[in-house]
Image (cartoon, rainbow, N blue to C red):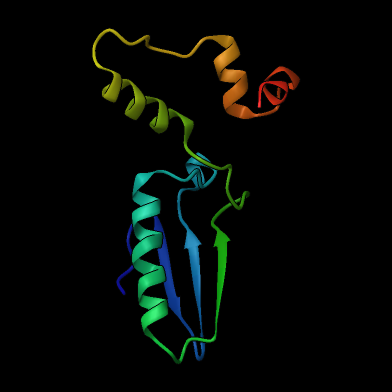
Length: 106
């Protein structure tokens, strides 16, 4: 598997090292990363000589989670031109799942 911009695939003797490679975004997971991971997992599953996989992040952070900016852009594109540009403060807090109010709603 070739190396790409968002995920590095390094084959070793009997294992693979996958490196999330978006250090400028603290390795936030976006559509391109999910697609690259899907291809990498398929290649790993097809190769029976691979006995383990290591997943790591380039730079200071492993991963900050889902790329909320990209998620917001996708949601806005799906909602059409009448959608608000940014979620309200309450919605933004619920996206982070850190708010007690948000937890109480679940």
